[in-house]
Amino acid sequence: MKVAFVDRDGTINKDYQDNTWRYISEPELIEGSVEALKAISQKGYQIIIVTNQYLINEGIIRLLQYKKFTEKLLLELNDNGIKILDIFYCPHSRDENCNCHKPKTGLIDMSLKKYPHVDLDKSFIVGDSISDVELGNKIDVMTFGINVESGLLKYTKVESLSDIIKYL
Ligand SMILES: [Mg+2]
Ligand SMILES: [Zn+2]
Image (cartoon, rainbow, N blue to C red; front, side):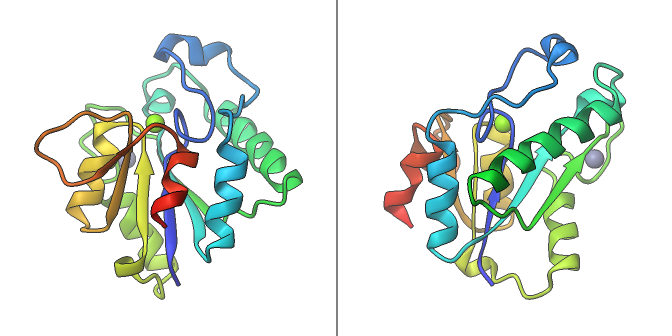
């Protein structure tokens, strides 16, 4: 199966300054992201969300807050006919040195363990941070960086999630 590994904050829903996340309980979808996810699944990709959530272990948001936000996001996407196969998140703080904080590969390793039939050659990753692009390069999949600037990494620069459809 081919998979779209999609970052969450700043890619599907709006992102905020770390401290602002304290007050956020409702996902605010980025314009065009619903249509984009629909188009991605219509092209035969299963969608797996991979997201760094260091704010959990850094004490800025509670785990329950993350879970409720996620539930609402999934409901809203589901209401729009979009099925998300799974979500893998890293709750660890940035100084915990875990192996799942992107660009480390732990979240992808978990995906491959749970879904051994993922064909990485046909899959891709998309996100709005340099860490998403670095991760994509590490696991050697097609990589899209939303407004990411780097001269060293191998990726296609796009302006939004919907901007990638023409490349699939
Ligand atoms: Mg992001
Ligand atoms: Zn982690």
